[in-house]
Image (cartoon, one colour):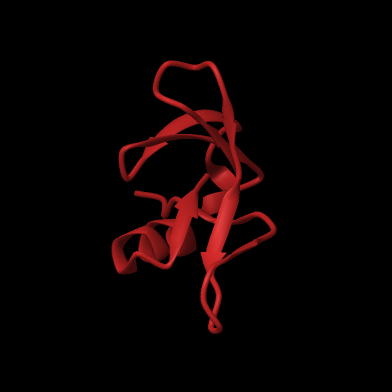
Length: 74
């Protein structure tokens, strides 16, 4: 049995934590609304309040941030 790493995953659209996200080289790049009409981008909760745009992140970091409610797609 071989261990699957993030780089072994195929690029393309995946469902992660209920979001449709585009994964490239193991990194979440962006998402799309459930109706497929509008692109969504990654935002991280800012320490001073509000949200900051963030660069691509691993699937594991995205999943953890969504569960902690510190990452959103907007």
